[in-house]
Amino acid sequence: MPSGSASLSKNSDNLLPRDGRVQYWPEFLSRESADQLSHELYHEVPWENDVCILFGRRMVTGRKVAWYADDRLAYRYSGSTKTGLPWTPVLQTLRTKVQSSLGASFNSCLLNLYENGSQGMGWHSDDERTLGKHPMIASVSIGAVRKFSFKHRVTRETFSLSLAHGSLLVMSAETQHHWVHSLPKTKTVNAERINLTFRTIYSMI
Image (cartoon, rainbow, N blue to C red; front, side):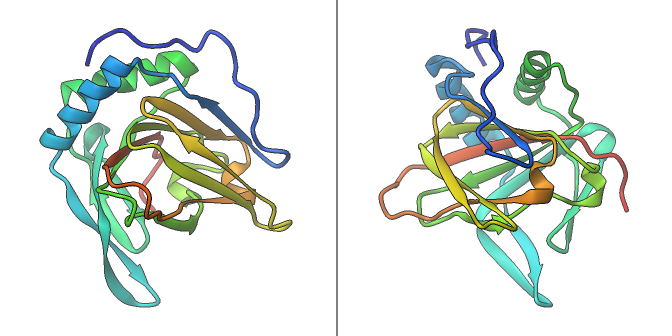
Protein backbone atom coordinates (compact mmCIF):
# COMPACT_ATOMS: atom_id res chain seq x y z
CA MET A 1 0.00 0.00 0.00
CA PRO A 2 1.50 3.38 -0.96
CA SER A 3 2.34 5.72 1.87
CA GLY A 4 0.49 8.73 0.48
CA SER A 5 -2.73 9.38 2.38
CA ALA A 6 -4.68 12.06 4.16
CA SER A 7 -3.86 12.69 7.81
CA LEU A 8 -6.28 13.44 10.63
CA SER A 9 -5.00 16.93 11.34
CA LYS A 10 -8.30 17.95 12.95
CA ASN A 11 -10.88 16.08 14.98
CA SER A 12 -14.03 15.33 13.03
CA ASP A 13 -17.37 16.59 14.35
CA ASN A 14 -19.57 14.10 16.18
CA LEU A 15 -22.30 12.98 13.79
CA LEU A 16 -24.56 11.65 16.53
CA PRO A 17 -27.04 14.03 18.18
CA ARG A 18 -26.76 12.18 21.52
CA ASP A 19 -25.70 9.01 23.33
CA GLY A 20 -22.43 8.20 21.63
CA ARG A 21 -19.82 9.40 19.18
CA VAL A 22 -19.39 8.82 15.45
CA GLN A 23 -16.67 10.56 13.44
CA TYR A 24 -16.02 10.42 9.70
CA TRP A 25 -13.04 11.25 7.49
CA PRO A 26 -13.95 10.80 3.78
CA GLU A 27 -10.35 10.98 2.49
CA PHE A 28 -8.44 8.98 5.08
CA LEU A 29 -6.55 7.21 2.28
CA SER A 30 -5.45 8.71 -1.02
CA ARG A 31 -7.20 7.40 -4.14
CA GLU A 32 -4.00 5.63 -5.19
CA SER A 33 -3.62 3.93 -1.80
CA ALA A 34 -7.27 2.90 -1.69
CA ASP A 35 -7.15 1.48 -5.24
CA GLN A 36 -4.06 -0.60 -4.49
CA LEU A 37 -5.47 -1.79 -1.17
CA SER A 38 -8.70 -2.87 -2.87
CA HIS A 39 -6.81 -4.96 -5.41
CA GLU A 40 -4.55 -6.61 -2.83
CA LEU A 41 -7.32 -7.45 -0.37
CA TYR A 42 -9.72 -8.76 -2.99
CA HIS A 43 -7.16 -11.20 -4.40
CA GLU A 44 -5.07 -12.11 -1.35
CA VAL A 45 -7.51 -12.46 1.57
CA PRO A 46 -8.89 -16.03 2.08
CA TRP A 47 -12.52 -14.92 1.94
CA GLU A 48 -15.22 -17.25 3.28
CA ASN A 49 -18.98 -16.90 3.45
CA ASP A 50 -20.06 -15.86 6.93
CA VAL A 51 -22.10 -18.25 9.05
CA CYS A 52 -24.50 -17.13 11.77
CA ILE A 53 -27.14 -18.72 13.97
CA LEU A 54 -30.57 -17.05 13.82
CA PHE A 55 -33.45 -18.42 15.89
CA GLY A 56 -31.56 -21.69 16.21
CA ARG A 57 -30.99 -22.07 12.48
CA ARG A 58 -27.60 -22.05 10.76
CA MET A 59 -27.52 -19.38 8.06
CA VAL A 60 -24.85 -18.79 5.40
CA THR A 61 -24.67 -15.15 4.36
CA GLY A 62 -24.00 -13.77 0.89
CA ARG A 63 -21.19 -11.56 2.06
CA LYS A 64 -17.76 -13.00 2.74
CA VAL A 65 -15.55 -12.35 5.76
CA ALA A 66 -12.06 -12.81 7.17
CA TRP A 67 -10.79 -12.34 10.73
CA TYR A 68 -7.22 -11.24 11.57
CA ALA A 69 -5.91 -10.86 15.11
CA ASP A 70 -2.91 -10.92 17.41
CA ASP A 71 -1.98 -14.31 18.89
CA ARG A 72 -4.83 -16.12 17.04
CA LEU A 73 -7.43 -14.38 19.16
CA ALA A 74 -10.93 -15.81 18.79
CA TYR A 75 -14.05 -13.72 18.18
CA ARG A 76 -17.57 -14.99 18.81
CA TYR A 77 -20.60 -13.25 17.31
CA SER A 78 -23.98 -14.31 15.89
CA GLY A 79 -23.47 -17.79 17.27
CA SER A 80 -20.20 -18.53 15.46
CA THR A 81 -16.55 -18.36 16.50
CA LYS A 82 -13.62 -17.28 14.34
CA THR A 83 -9.93 -17.74 15.12
CA GLY A 84 -7.65 -14.92 14.01
CA LEU A 85 -5.39 -15.25 10.99
CA PRO A 86 -1.86 -13.78 11.23
CA TRP A 87 -1.54 -10.20 10.01
CA THR A 88 -0.35 -9.74 6.43
CA PRO A 89 2.13 -6.93 5.68
CA VAL A 90 -0.53 -4.79 3.98
CA LEU A 91 -2.98 -5.19 6.87
CA GLN A 92 -0.26 -4.49 9.41
CA THR A 93 0.63 -1.29 7.55
CA LEU A 94 -2.99 -0.16 7.52
CA ARG A 95 -3.45 -1.03 11.21
CA THR A 96 -0.39 1.05 12.09
CA LYS A 97 -1.77 4.03 10.16
CA VAL A 98 -5.21 3.78 11.78
CA GLN A 99 -3.69 3.46 15.25
CA SER A 100 -1.28 6.36 14.86
CA SER A 101 -3.99 8.58 13.35
CA LEU A 102 -6.42 7.94 16.21
CA GLY A 103 -3.96 7.50 19.08
CA ALA A 104 -5.56 4.12 19.76
CA SER A 105 -4.58 0.45 19.75
CA PHE A 106 -6.37 -2.44 18.04
CA ASN A 107 -5.55 -6.14 18.27
CA SER A 108 -7.90 -7.45 15.60
CA CYS A 109 -9.76 -6.69 12.38
CA LEU A 110 -12.92 -8.11 10.83
CA LEU A 111 -13.04 -7.78 7.05
CA ASN A 112 -16.31 -7.93 5.09
CA LEU A 113 -16.59 -8.35 1.32
CA TYR A 114 -19.83 -7.26 -0.34
CA GLU A 115 -19.75 -8.31 -4.01
CA ASN A 116 -22.50 -5.86 -5.00
CA GLY A 117 -25.50 -3.96 -3.68
CA SER A 118 -27.59 -7.12 -3.28
CA GLN A 119 -25.47 -7.93 -0.22
CA GLY A 120 -25.81 -5.86 2.93
CA MET A 121 -26.10 -6.01 6.72
CA GLY A 122 -29.26 -5.66 8.78
CA TRP A 123 -29.70 -3.60 11.95
CA HIS A 124 -27.26 -4.64 14.67
CA SER A 125 -24.74 -3.30 17.17
CA ASP A 126 -21.21 -4.44 17.95
CA ASP A 127 -21.88 -4.96 21.63
CA GLU A 128 -20.33 -8.35 22.37
CA ARG A 129 -18.88 -8.50 25.89
CA THR A 130 -15.43 -9.30 24.52
CA LEU A 131 -15.31 -5.80 22.98
CA GLY A 132 -15.64 -4.07 26.37
CA LYS A 133 -18.23 -1.65 27.71
CA HIS A 134 -17.66 1.27 25.31
CA PRO A 135 -15.65 -0.06 22.36
CA MET A 136 -13.94 2.04 19.73
CA ILE A 137 -14.41 0.54 16.27
CA ALA A 138 -12.51 2.04 13.34
CA SER A 139 -14.01 1.18 9.96
CA VAL A 140 -12.11 1.68 6.69
CA SER A 141 -14.19 1.45 3.50
CA ILE A 142 -12.71 0.41 0.15
CA GLY A 143 -14.48 0.15 -3.20
CA ALA A 144 -18.08 1.00 -4.04
CA VAL A 145 -19.70 3.90 -2.19
CA ARG A 146 -22.46 2.52 0.04
CA LYS A 147 -25.10 4.03 2.32
CA PHE A 148 -24.55 3.40 6.05
CA SER A 149 -27.39 4.01 8.50
CA PHE A 150 -27.84 4.51 12.25
CA LYS A 151 -31.00 4.14 14.38
CA HIS A 152 -31.44 5.05 18.04
CA ARG A 153 -32.74 2.16 20.13
CA VAL A 154 -35.21 4.29 22.13
CA THR A 155 -36.17 7.35 20.07
CA ARG A 156 -36.00 5.43 16.74
CA GLU A 157 -34.49 8.49 15.05
CA THR A 158 -32.24 7.64 12.11
CA PHE A 159 -29.56 9.18 9.97
CA SER A 160 -27.43 7.93 7.11
CA LEU A 161 -24.23 8.82 5.29
CA SER A 162 -22.40 7.55 2.22
CA LEU A 163 -19.09 5.83 2.97
CA ALA A 164 -16.53 6.82 0.34
CA HIS A 165 -13.68 4.80 -1.17
CA GLY A 166 -10.75 5.19 1.23
CA SER A 167 -12.80 6.69 4.08
CA LEU A 168 -12.59 6.11 7.83
CA LEU A 169 -15.60 5.95 10.16
CA VAL A 170 -15.04 5.68 13.92
CA MET A 171 -17.71 4.64 16.41
CA SER A 172 -16.86 5.14 20.09
CA ALA A 173 -18.12 6.07 23.57
CA GLU A 174 -21.69 4.75 24.18
CA THR A 175 -22.59 4.32 20.51
CA GLN A 176 -23.01 0.52 20.55
CA HIS A 177 -25.24 0.68 23.64
CA HIS A 178 -27.70 3.26 22.31
CA TRP A 179 -27.56 2.89 18.52
CA VAL A 180 -27.81 0.12 15.94
CA HIS A 181 -26.38 0.41 12.44
CA SER A 182 -26.86 -1.23 9.05
CA LEU A 183 -25.62 -1.40 5.47
CA PRO A 184 -28.86 -1.36 3.42
CA LYS A 185 -29.10 -3.39 0.24
CA THR A 186 -29.44 -1.44 -2.99
CA LYS A 187 -30.09 -2.17 -6.66
CA THR A 188 -28.00 0.78 -7.82
CA VAL A 189 -24.55 -0.60 -6.86
CA ASN A 190 -22.96 -3.31 -9.01
CA ALA A 191 -19.36 -3.14 -7.74
CA GLU A 192 -17.72 -4.74 -4.71
CA ARG A 193 -17.01 -3.04 -1.39
CA ILE A 194 -14.53 -4.15 1.27
CA ASN A 195 -14.96 -2.97 4.84
CA LEU A 196 -12.23 -3.37 7.48
CA THR A 197 -13.30 -2.88 11.10
CA PHE A 198 -10.42 -2.57 13.54
CA ARG A 199 -11.34 -3.40 17.12
CA THR A 200 -9.95 -4.62 20.44
CA ILE A 201 -10.86 -8.00 21.88
CA TYR A 202 -10.27 -8.21 25.64
CA SER A 203 -11.05 -11.87 26.36
CA MET A 204 -12.89 -14.87 25.03
CA ILE A 205 -16.02 -15.48 27.08
